[in-house]
Image 1 (cartoon, one colour):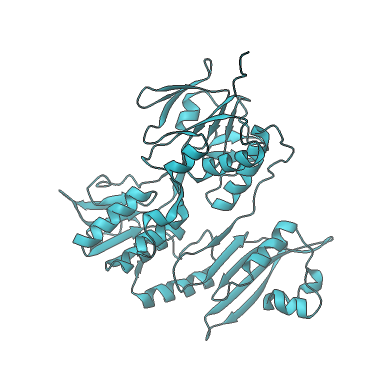
Image 2: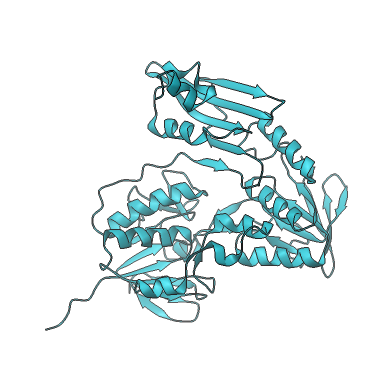
Length: 416
């Protein structure tokens, strides 16, 4: 009597989104698939969110490992570490790795993540110019900090500020260069960004805002940066933290429908091939591309349910929130902080304590609803505001008390 072969699931990408999907799949149907995972890095899956604490010296690489090689073996998963997939043959339903290994699949999950964007100015390939995306980048920065003194971080967003703080913690003199006139402009309004800049300057960081990089100077190694206004600074290390781009080259070469990323439906299934799913930063869903972890977790659970054939949920998209991982600085941002003609702002300022809160309210005949929040200095109620956003809760009755937080509203008997 022959045993029925289990269907084969091949996961392309050994990062957080792909492996979270596998984790969820093992909860739904632990023995449903014969699973193989291909990754470009030569080790198991780790928590990229915690790369900043590793750079700052608060954690070691071992502390941020999520799935060791032993975990894959214990769950009967074949791991091809350091051997990324370079081609998908959809007709034969086979993937081909860099080493030439061929793995057949019945279902394919693409979790290829994203690539750091490097400004293509003259000198961007010089030694000493690096991105901030994986543990190899962190190790390169730590090595540079032991033998060099000056660092420049190009990019005043979330990742750039975390990189700058980590390098400063390693003893380097750090300048943050940003093309916009305020920090974290995608997450913060200008009052909150000003408070953040002041706090970071007191710690020793320097900032050059509205600065456009024209050239990275050096011969054998980077020695400085020249700007479009003709000014220059000296530096021994340049960290590019100017954003990421979805990594969908593999999918596109396989003929899958791609726009800004791999286009998927509400089940995370690709539009072109029903056998192929995709999750994470490589995905475009309802026109949106996500780079934060919470949407990835939501995608993973929905996708795993459908791969396990127990799927009934749909992924509707996500409202995102951001928290800066710099010790001693409390900052929280969620939703739409820009607003529009149909919105109003609720604002609380306490300059002496360094506290700033702004809630963006959309008024309608159906009531008032929070669509965005920016908090600095006191972020305890950030998750509550975020929950109200996700629920689309009517906060009309709480409006006059909302800025004082959940505890105050509950004490008044009016918490949503």
